[in-house]
Image (cartoon, rainbow, N blue to C red):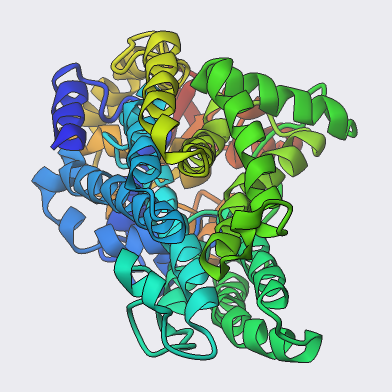
Length: 497
C-alpha cells in the first residue's frame, strides 16, 4: 500500500519517467517484438535480461509503454518482496519480528528507495531478488542435513521445500544474477558465507564444499547462458566499456573510489544509519562465530549470510576505479543493505530494549532523510536531463513534419530514452536502426547512405555517442548528409537528394 501510494505520488509529479534509464529500460523491453529485427537477440547484452523479459509483453501495449505503468508495477511488487524477505529472514533467524519490521520500515521509508520503486528502473527488482536469495540461502543452511529443529518450526524458519534442497535458493540466485550486476558479488558472498555457516554447524570441509557447490551451480549456469547470449548478440562475451568516458578522479585510486561510495551512502541514508549498519554487521559476525553465547544456535549463525548484501559496493568500487563517472544512484543498493543490517542488529539486542532501539533507528532515518523529500539525491539526479528533454523538441518537430518512413540511424546505447520520447509522436522502435539490429547496424555505422535516410547523433552526453565518434574519425561518414535540426545535444542529419 505504501509503495503504491509513493508510485502514484511521483507519477502525479511527472517524475516516474524522469530518469533517462527509466525510459531506456522500457525501450529495451519493447524492442523484443517491436524492431526491424525482432527476436530473443533484442534482449541485449549490456543490461541483464530479466527486467526486460518480465516487461516485454506488457509494453507491447502502447499505453503501458508510454506511461511505464507495467514497469512501475514490477518495481512496487519487487520492493514489497524485498521487505517481506528480509523481515522473514531476521524474524526466522532470531525469533524477533521487531527486528524484521525495523528492517522493512527502514527500507520503505528511504526517499531514494521510494522514488526508484516508483519508476521502471531495475534497482527494485535487484532488491527483491537479492533479498529473497539471501533469505533462502540462510534457510537452506539451517535445513541442510535434516528437518528443521523444533525451535525453527516455532518461528516458521526453515520450513519450505525438502531439507537440503537447493531449488528455491538456486532459482532466487538465478533471478538475482539476471537482474543487475550488483547481484554477482552479493550472490557469491552469500554462497561463501553459507560455506562458513556449514562449517560452524560441524560439517567437514569436504562436505561443506560439496553442499555449496550444488548451490553455486545455479547462478554459474545462468551466467554461462548470459555470456553465450552476449557473444551471439554483440560479438563479445562481456561488454565492460565503450559506453562512458573515463573521467572520474578516482581512476586508478580504489581508496578515493571507496570514499565516493561512502559519501554517497551518507547522502542517501543520512549519517546515522550507515554507522548503525557497521555496528550491526560486527554484532552479526560476533554472534555467528560464537563470540556470544547466542551464537551457538544454528539459526542465528545463519544470520551472517545477511552481510553479503554489503558486497553490492564491489561494483561501484570497481567502476569508479576504472574511471566511470560517479552516480549517486549506484549507492542505493547499499542503502537497502544498511536497512537489513540495522534491523538484524536490533533483533540481536535484549528483547526488552528492542522496541525502543527500533523506534530510535526509524526516527533517526525519518529525521535525517524524510520520505518524499523533493531534494533527495536520486530524485534530483533523475531530473538532470530535463533541459535536454526540452531542447530536443526542435528535433522532434522537424522529424514529425518531414519524416518519410525511412529508417533513422540512432544509437540506442545513448539515445534509447529519446526513442521513448518519440513514441508520443507516433514513432515505434522498428523505425530506428540501432545496435540491436546486429550486422545491419555494423554496416550502417561504416556506410550509412545505402540504408539510412536519417541519422540522429548524441554529441554531448558522455563525450558523444558511437555515431558522433564515427563522424569525428571518418570524414566520409556524413558525406551526402545535411544537418537539418539540433537541440538538447542531439543533431539530426538527412541524406541529400
